[in-house]
Length: 482
Image (cartoon, rainbow, N blue to C red; front, side, top):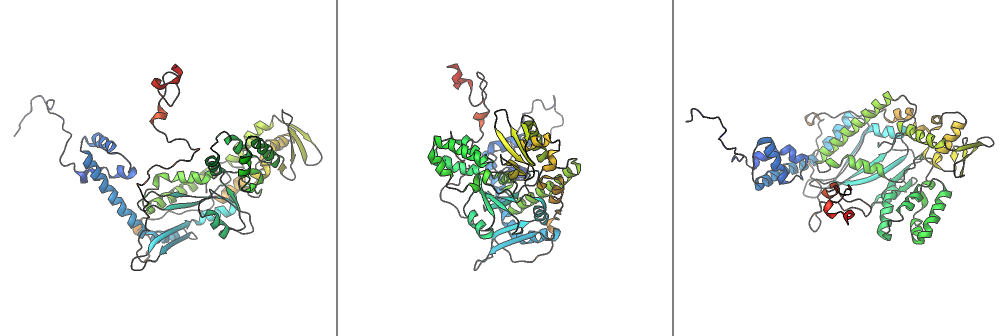
């Protein structure tokens, strides 16, 4: 027995190995870390162990611990599918009027298999009907959990251009990426609705056909043209470069992708489906989680979103939305450079420095550039006329962009859901997860990028050359020294 130590523990060596640090213990202490990012390497997990517990262990122990955690997570995936009907019943109980549908497939000799789950909060339905522009972006993103699957979403924009049944008499428009089955489903369910195609995806198909990136700018300018005259002018310019490109574009009807041909009743000038891409990015960190965890994450984000927008509206001192105010401010600066001439009645003529004329009719709410009637927001020509008449431009903003409509959009309430043990009793037959069809070959971990997408960020893009000070290479490979 050691009764005293001379000189303290200075001479005692530091030992970081411990036989008690087996795979089960490592799995217990690093469970939350692994679940947050299952792709963490063994090297990273070793460093975390050393920093937190001053313990080192072998890579094999780390692999075994990670396998234990991931196997437990797979069990959570299976259990989540069995609770889907009960979860839907809990949503309806706390949010009356919410639409929840669960589709199961009967399999002889076994439990029913999960097929689809759909839900739409009553508050979102009411807000869309009361004050959201009738443009819906539809898209899907692949789930990366144990059983895979696809999450389909329908997104709309409020008056502040933020992501958020319908009367057949009212106009409605759908924007999609033309994925498999989308157009056919829209034609069956909404035969009288107008359809738009995301021009960014059209451009990707164009690049795969022509392999020419020099015409990208002209293609975008053609799609963004607000008037038919400007559209034809830019198409003529493209025809001088390639008549094949013109023929390729005109294969699709202009009202599907060209801004000047959009339905003016929709009051939206969007030519891309970015609102759906933003939604997919919104949930990207949860796509590998069990389905109940994913749905709860989405529900909480929607609740917080509604609450934040309501708080913003209470503090808003303007009669129009911040997006509309920002657009008007930009157009006011541009409109001050225009000359305005008043004709008869409601007709006005605006002239820029280059002598180009645009006619504005404030009675018919039209402008030769086309942007006022398409978007519902006065363009720079309209704003110049309003300043000429000494009237406020915000009085001529469409109803969709007013504070009143924003309040109607977020007038509903989404109630929280209690803890699972307090869900309403719902007795139903146990169901199994759907069968994931394994593809031939090694599973792909890196998403295949489109031809026009930038490369994935890596270390090479963060290197800064000490010779020319540019990013992407080092001084050894710098061409400026040659």
